Amino acid sequence: MKTNNYLLVKALFALFFYSLFGIIWDVYANDAQDWNQFHGPKRDRISSESNWLSNWDENPPKQLWRQTIGIGFSSISVVGNRVYTMGNQDDKDTVWCFDANTGQEIWRHTYSCELFPKMHEGGPGGTPTVDADAVFTVSKDGQMFCLNAFNGEVNWSKNLQKEFGAEMPTWRFALSPLLENDMVILDIGLAVALHKKTGEVIWKSHNYESAYSSPIAFDFQEKRYIAIFPKFGLVLLDAENGKEFGKYKWDTRYGCNAATPIFHENKFFVSSGYGRGGSVIALNDNGELKEVWYNRLMRNHMNSCVLWNGFLYGFD
Image (cartoon, rainbow, N blue to C red; front, side):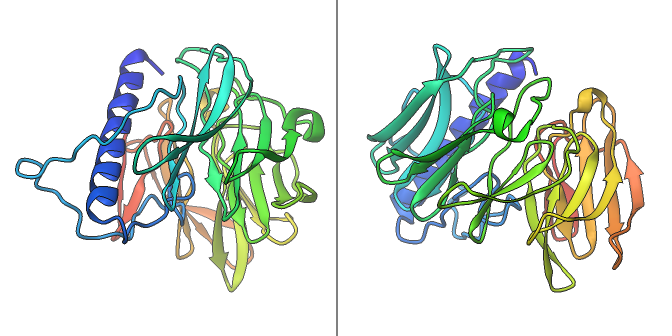
């Protein structure tokens, strides 16, 4: 990760920020869709909203407010009229909650966490996941918090390294928690399902060694599964008990599997950088995974593609 990538991240952040808040709340305040987690409500990176204003020459988006949140790569979650994100200042992470209309700070939660600028600017890499009354976050060094969504008070917390023996990858954790019914699910090399109200462990999987991806949930043959993309590669787990259903070895240099898998019908798309490439992998009824095609034309280093009408759009 180089500085020019960081500037691009900031530019994209600004574009997202200004268009989201300048268009949705200023023009379509009553119709806005909650974007409660990393990659959106379905983790498919697709918004169901319509009537977006695209003629910016005649009606450009307006900057409504600006806040300094610190260094990091956390994205933004939006529920109702509240905005949640994370940043790092002076080796301290802060989880922020702002009013979406005014930018006024509603609450913050701050804790010690090293910036860790290893070949990049450092700071948190995960995005807050927001439930009806709670916010779930994971820090770069594996501190997990369940915060009260209304006032930021700590409902419960976990040290993921100490409690589960999770080994931090080279650039430390970058995952965003996944909500699945009463569970919050993490990929820290092993997948862990915690009760979202109490933090109680519901199940945990075998350890496949940690990387940087975030889990997704999917349906197959009328059953619910979780897909993770740790250092080992693509792993499929029973959402009810965490038992392994299938796995596919996908080696990337430095163990850098970071993009989120995409599932459609009975196929997955996985991709990674360092020259590795991308592949579509088919899932059969017995949990066996077989490559359909592979090429090196789409190498998602960190950010996942978007699947739209049978085509994959993304950054190589």
